[in-house]
Image (tube, rainbow, N blue to C red):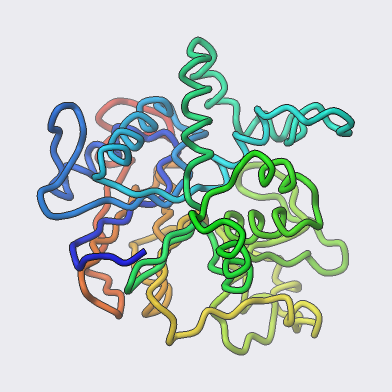
Length: 330
């Protein structure tokens, strides 16, 4: 996609925090015209994960979809939108599972708020599922790139050949539910990122209470030596694992997004602290808004080196939750 050099405001994972989104849009200079947020000179790019966990999922979806359909915003699909599609899409005749995403207690727990908030709005849920199917998986502009979790050039090149619009269809969705297919690999890498299996059958318990046998990894380390060099998630590795040298196999499985690549914007990774670039050309905009964190935007103009002073955010605990007496959601 060739962009005119207008300003773009990239917004990280919302997860149903509609009040925080409205406050952030206001801080960014957007206002409602005919019920839709817009800006006279700028556009928003949403990095996916609009749904799940938060108290106002339907409201957030309406705000975002209205902006996208009116031409005031772009969006890429997040892993939570993809999970929602798979959880609600029946398998085909002869399939081993009744749905593309198995209805386990763990999968239900992740989607519970979304399913509950749509329980009395089945037609609206159907319409949003159709809209999610049309979301591009990534966007490449003249001078920057956007994807939910990880830019994997060879997978993207192959996808571009098969799907020039960067969007999936029903056949793709069904194939993507089968591990080992190209479609599964693409969705796993672009929407969930890179990860490694913990060595020696180790298990860690994440902050959201799930047992995990893998951990999320950086894809911008040029010469990592240990597992601690590449971990990229809120949950730390056990110290003895962090000190272990990477095996040759695990090192070869890692990606490297080089310093000479276009600026890249991602969400997904539950960062903490004061927002700043990960590297001069990579910014993660997910700062755990739905867990008393921050809903973060980056105000991109013509810069090719990302700058800390271009981040703007809503502190959910201080600006939303305390005022309304909410729990850890905004």
